[in-house]
Image (cartoon, rainbow, N blue to C red; front, side, top):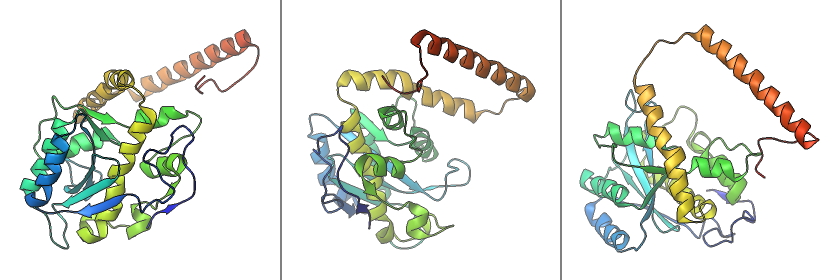
Amino acid sequence: MPKHSGGYHPAYHGQYVDPNFPDRYTRNLIRTKEDMIPLVRQYMGMEEKIFSFDFESSGLDIEMNSEVCGASFCFDGYNSYYLPIDHKLGENGDMYAFALIIGMVYAADDALVFNAEFEYRCLRSLGYDIKDLLLFDLIPLIWNADTNVTRLNLKGAEKDILAWDRPDFVETFGKGITPDMVTPEETYDYAGFDAISPFLFYHMFSKTREDRKNIIELDQKLIKAVISIEDFVFEADVDLLKEYRIDVVNQIEDQTQTIYQAVGYEFNINSRP
């Protein structure tokens, strides 16, 4: 069970974050279309549809050797739901219910994820067309919230920003274990928080619709370009690229020194003003 280390980020006023973590947030295990239909009706009735979701899988090399084994989602900031579809142990849910989840993704005003490239690849591995789908990746928002702090994963961001002290998957289940190797009953609590926290980060750091629009136009559209590049193997002159890198590093250093001289002192040039 995750622990709360006290307090919450000063940039946020506690609309969702609560010192009673994790009791304020419910995690639910679902399996059927009957479980899903009331949730779909509630969601489709919302004026603004913000949908946070996360896939669990048998590994990180989706589209190669790994498969999606379940999906968690949250659309109100408090309640999350996990649908298992390919666990080796326990009872899995039906694919009709899973299709309803995907329909909610495509119907969203903003479909939230942490690491959009992985989620795009999961969707594509399941046969869904991602051409016109634009996921809202929380990584740019979280990383730019404070450029002096490096947050390499979701758990690190939760600990630093939300004050959630939540173990990662290896700490929870053990080394060499993947989500598909444990029962849905053992997974849904862990997976549920993976859908809740991106929803909270979205409301913390994306203040206005204009902010969201700018982020989508800049950061989010680049993700599909990266996927396209990674999909195709191409030859590269490694030695030439190393020379380019040295030249770029030298130019950055020269420009940095020029800025220091103009300002009159040295400072962290990568920090936000």
